[in-house]
Image (tube, rainbow, N blue to C red; front, side, top):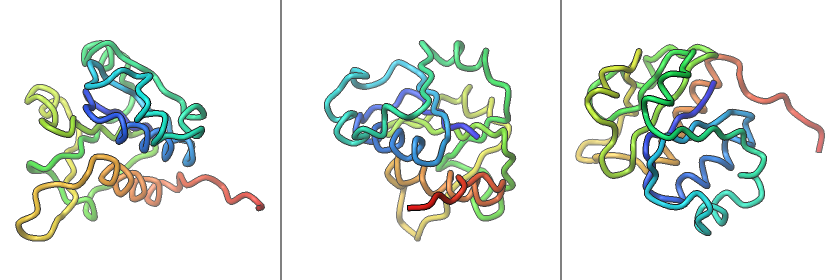
Length: 153
């Protein structure tokens, strides 16, 4: 299981996602260009020291990312797709999320092997990127038995 962020715009969201990914042992692909410098303070503040523990691969653009894709691309989208609670995930899936402001281009949308939407209350447009990522990843890990093993405290 991997998370891929297509041209994210907000450092704080990426930092939060890196922290979550480190905690769950899930790798992250960052598809550039991004709307901030990777060394941005907001990224460090949101990710705290956990972000350094995340497995991160940076890709110069969509083509570079796509060339290395080996799993199924599962696009989380607000337009169309199957409901999250009806989707079936696989352990090798790459959960792909678009940028906060514009999502993904049509060609990227069309490339997805599966399109999934998180159902929202009437009149609501979208969730925060990091929140949507957490909800989708949690369901995917639940279905695939991918949660980390419990550790003694």
